[in-house]
Length: 183
Image 1 (cartoon, rainbow, N blue to C red):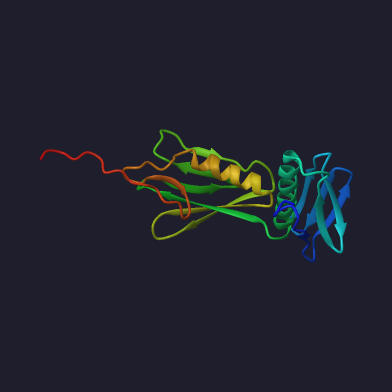
Image 2: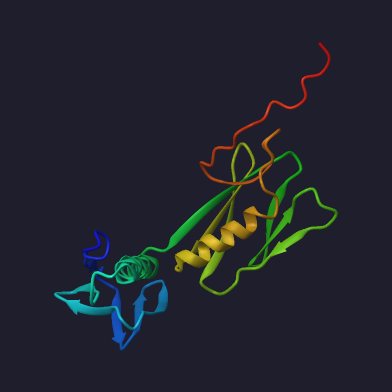
């Protein structure tokens, strides 16, 4: 058995799950998510918990077993608690501001960069701290939140000499020495 796949997914109090053939629909206080399950993997409700099973021990079935269970667990967490990724901006002239629902960046380019949330399930927050700007990306879909964070980070990746750019909170950037000059 897959160590991840064999664990049942516990449902919090305000979360409802509907299984319609190969479609799993999860509703909660923060919204609703839908996931299609591979035809050979089955999902069932047992004693108020979701159980994912596979037909055999074939390598593909083992992989799909753990994957399906993880996706469903992320859906349950997303509609009940939500997900958050935090980005930090380092650099003297680098800035971020909110314009309605959109993020507007000044990142040393000749123009402002505007980032719009891809759908209503993702929202942005800006928090000012002592060292720079902090951006929070909130949403119910873990994949979407992570992809939006990666897209924003790609606007100005951290450079290794001065450490300027957009990074994830807690990300360690290896610094390079730079030129040594005359000796």
